[in-house]
Image 1 (cartoon, helix red, strand yellow):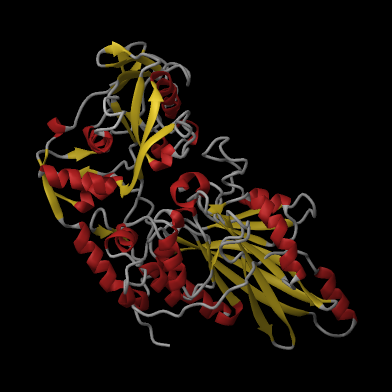
Image 2 (cartoon, one colour):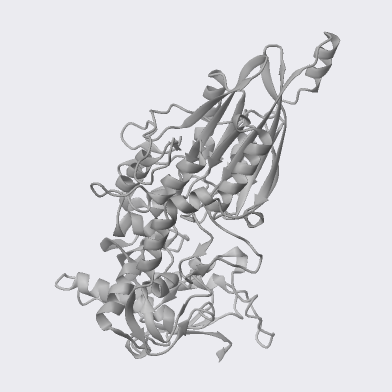
Length: 599
């Protein structure tokens, strides 16, 4: 069928499942067949998988307006993955392969933002989403829902679903009223084997319970997200009873067993390995969400003693995971003899010209969009030192947030309450050059599609919030050498979970243990009053509990909106015309040791 950018096949209703069976080794089958004088029937199956594509179709950095490069020599994009997939299908035979994804597909680049907000797919007669077009053309069989699928609301997600020729799976994405699956829980595919009964492969899709926190505004009262282990234990036996010879789980959940939302939910955020350990009947798990590369991880199921094989390919289409299954037919059924996992690297191949041709127009439109000039900067600004110094470029974010929230609360009973703001150093390489400022420059400063919320908090709560944030720094004794490359990310805390708070002045004493670092905290030149009320202008991720910062999730919400903070920054710069640090920069905090500044 010829490819058409504006047309798509609407998929039929799917009642599908996954691929899993706790690797029933069957060496005895060969011996039994040999005794009968005939060789055992065998079948080789390859399941391919990607995850956390985040809108990466081409090896292109929209923020730098150039080909993507990094120190490790990685390459990105579905166009590269398409070439890898074609290679595997040529090697294994397309009829012996399955192609899956573990979620986070429609958010993450200016390309995906453009088709969600600027030229939205939800508009009447609107475009087909570029990710749907690319994944349809490559021939994906099934895709698990990621948490970022919900960032633009359920209407956008449902439209994307409609445009896909494959099911979006979410066995633990339930209708809040009926508690029935709101998306297909599973996908089932039959593989025909010459001279033997067919092999039935089930794919169970599981998504992240954290959606209930991170996208509360969109899903509260509409969808609920129970734990992966609970739902896998419910569905895997069903899939087996339906005749699945192989069960594969596509899980938008990391393997570490940790959570970033503290005790706000009774479910584990990164529970893929726990699913493998606790739920019998699973052969393999395609892992997502964590953005780490795991070529192969073997987890022993505690009930059967059998090994479950996990693999997580690197995000942004930098890797393709392969699960190579060997099956044996014995006593009237197929069983999994072995599973081996590996990854292939996108930097080893060129773009697939079919994908390049199909999506070039969309790509060019977005390149032109992000290169629009919206203002002029009087001097260059950068995030290079923003992790450990109060950088003016981050003050730009907090200033915009303060202004938006003050305007929103004008005329209300909270109009006189002081507004302070939170922001994180998301990028270590973002820069706004002196001269013309483009949407691309500002987008690189705020890479997430977060929106703004106003929360009412006390001085004591703000101090606790700052103490929690200051855990980001590695304890460094007074007089000890300071290596800025080893100073931050204590305990693995990512940069996006370190917050500045504007409107106050304070010191962070990194010689002190975590929890006792905030010094000389003041507002308006006076020591902070624990009882004083503040309005905290905060992004929705943090406001809903992302990062597990204290008090903020439970604080009274005064106002919120659906416009992205990134858009508010662009509007602010456009209105000003000139981006001058004197209009937003301030020195609010510094690192110290025993009262002596580190820098």
